[in-house]
Amino acid sequence: MREITLPISDETVRSLGVGEAVALSGVMITGRDAVHKWIVETFIKKTRPPQGDDLEVYEAIKPLLNGGVIYHCGPVVAGLDTGEYRFVAAGPTTSIREEPYQADVMRHFNAKGVIGKGGMGAKTLQGCQEVPFVYFHAIGGAASLIAQSVRRVVAVHKLEFGVPEAIWVIEVERFPVVVTMDAHGNSLHEKVEETSKANLEALLAA
Amino acid sequence: MNDLTEAILELIRRTSTDLPEDVEARLRAALEQEEEGSAARGALETILKNVELARENSTPICQDTGTPLFYVRYPEGMSTRALRRQIIAAVQEATRRTYLRPNAVDAITGRNSGDNTGDEHYPTIHFEEVDADQPLVIELMLKGGGCENVGAQYKLPDSRLGAGRDLEGVRKVALDAVYKAQGKGCAPGVLGIAIGGDRGSSYLASKEALLRRLDDPNPNPDLDALEKRLTEEANQLGIGPMGFGGKTTVLGTKVKGLHRLPASYFVSVSYMCWAYRRRRMTVRGDEVLYE
Image (cartoon, rainbow over all chains, first blue to last red; front, side, top):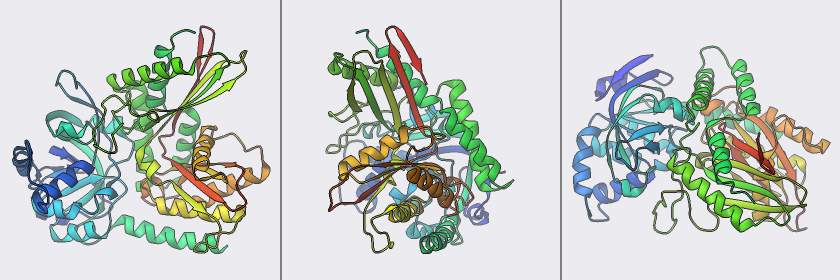
């Protein structure tokens, strides 16, 4: 398994291919539905003015995302009452819901990797080549196991979005993932969809 | 009646952290089917490692601890209001102890209630009265959002798929649902299928079908044959664990028939992820039995 430490360079991104198993280490952030919508509306399309601590949070995540990774994850977190946070269960959530936003978010921050599950669509794959970045697939549901590679919760932002939707800044060690969309236009998901479509048609005709 | 809050809390803990043995057995059998060194086999190895770890450490198998769906059969004379209060108290405590993730979000304001309580449908509790000499039985299913999102409802006939109003038509739309889900519902999944009903009762029954054990044959021979055929054919689609490609897309299929209006022929498919979390507790006097 290939070891990669964050931040990731463009050269490393381009050297990754579909099917490659990777162990990621370093500091990354979680972000899912509420976070992607908030980033796009407030800082990219600017259809809503920044409110509350929006600008502070933006400045805090900017350096982390430059060369960094965004993890589609809504964790189970212990220590909510004491503030001594610890990830108890932290598998990936389904990524396709971020399809309208993902490529724009990655371009805006110069981010180099998305971790999620289920893969993403054509707009994201196009972004993978242009920005460039790659899509890392984690094993859906393997939440207790993945939580063990989270060494430390560094900070949390936007907790008002709720525990699953907040921005958790986490330090991970050897987080196991597989590249399923690379920066050269290859997508395992596209391939499996094509094959399974042909198989479905054969079964429907039978 | 005794206060059952503690006993229900234990039901929630077991459901969230300890995968039923029939599901684990199917996952182990599936692993043997996948090629050495393949991404599909790697995914199943990770899944099984996670199942063991969650059980050992009493931590959630999956961070999406889902919608808590309670099915309660209570003996005549027992108060359902008292049972509802105890279930809700247990759910709140389970959230504090991180057996459950705070999952209830107000659809209008977007605010998470923080303790898995919400309107009268959250958590979801179905009550059914049984004879006074029968035990209290509470079944719990935790169904995550990823797999709930890939569920589908069809109305037959469906000309796009060439599906008519018969079991052959049911077969076609069910395969289409599995194809559309790809790996997004955390394959390998389990299919709960209801044929008939109205839109609401049909979806409800498709989830009830999932309460059966995986190795429990359907008493109706036609439906039993359909269940076996659908599992076999879904596995020929090549979607595989996590959608990585491979031989295991579906671990099992459960079908239930309902009465329908002459005008309607619904087929509802509830897709359950591999983390098929369901447990049952039976209460007889002071004795509580968990399965």
